[in-house]
Image (cartoon, rainbow, N blue to C red):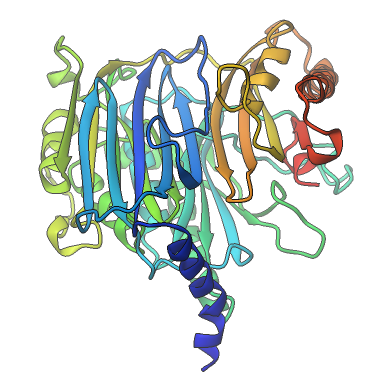
Length: 485
């Protein structure tokens, strides 16, 4: 009876969504984009069917390529086919629908984050590093827990010296993108042993591979962006383990990649099935972003093309069932045969059996020196307001526009949700390119001035467009914990 009582809020959430929509399915759009350094818009309006109950949006980019996702529930009656339907509508653009999975229930208040750091250096991966990311991804997704968010590369974290205060005032400016994997999972409050078992399992892998491990600081008064360090990064062990496991990998930096989105109903175990298959085929991961939008799972992967198959080819867009998609991926991106690799279970017998693979490539990567790039976090909540052209006012783009006159910048990732009441709530991470000649002691002051000025300018812009100041909650900071306070 206690377990049923615990599920009542989640069941009520599903029932409310079903009552407010005329279809049991959620529609989605996926876009694969290249060369996003100039500008990218994060419009929360669906490209079709403007009658929507609620919509969620997620976008991410790295190395000059990226993904943009949007989901919404139609108000017009519909009778979608069971499972997943998807089709190509243009180069790099896909449309489809997914019947939601009511069994994917979680309480967002009972969640925790895990940060696994391969190296604190800026993102500059070779082929062996991409295989280490695959190994880390497999280890982090192997537990029987719902994954709400996963991202790599991200800003690694390093504990400030003990002499600094706990409010983070002594935290050094972080690298914007590093070889690290960050995961947000949902946990059953009635089973704390599952969280301890997961952390213990990942800790064994981290210790063996020399990776750093942090978990969410769950002490009273702590907020998102504050970490409890379990293991510190050991660069010597990491390099030795990388050479031991993947010394046979091709040398040099990947020059071409495939963009892949695995989409289907959110289910516990689907990520583990995908990760195990990628590891068994020796497919590296340059970047991965995994998110659950309205109970639809999107797993976005940037996989390096094997040098032996990196021939000049026109970019193509395909939508394939997961078995055929993984087979094509192994053919183009598998770095060796399955010598010494553990054989993966057939995808047909896993929770990801009915997933679709949306594939675009090969695309050209831009792996550049990122020593001077620093992260800036943005969170906002405001009424849904559209400009004169009918597009939703894009808060991350507004912040970025206010930063660009002083330094170059881009949006690394952004997630937003439109509520049925007509408000939009979002979270984003930007990257700012500071002057490489700037002294380290001057970087905190420069970032603080940029963030404060951008926040004031964006608030003034919103007020000029008729948004009441009291209805806006906007925070811009280069320390993540300060955005959450």
